Length: 175
Image (tube, helix red, strand yellow):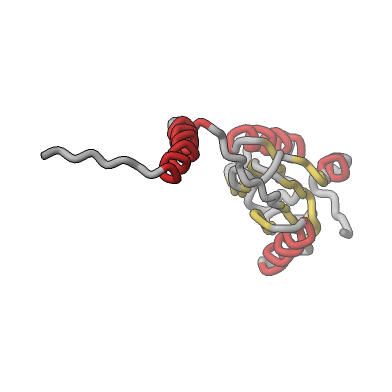
């Protein structure tokens, strides 16, 4: 014998309330949540280069720092540990790379640096700047430092290029 159950009146009322909720939730669950882009976290990172302007073989880097002050302090400390009389020549923030090129030996002013979105672009700038200071001698020594992706837009904060450009190779400086 087949029996049918009949919902009491209160059950029917509940069913009328429940059906739209179920239908709405099914339609909503059909939407792909991965189609909505999630915002990328950006944390600004800083970098700096310190060198001994009288002898470019002494240098110090800092990158991925949370503040400009921290980046410059670390770059100066790293340079001073090598024995140089160091000053900051480059400070920047954001995603990008800095390259430093220098010539070994007693050339003194044979160095240059560059900052760009890629290491390759920054290296071109460093080579050019070094050639300006060394009468075209090639700079075989290269070091680089990059801030990671999502470090903010690349921004040059300080560049001592013009200060040093006025000096001629072999000039003794008192920085």
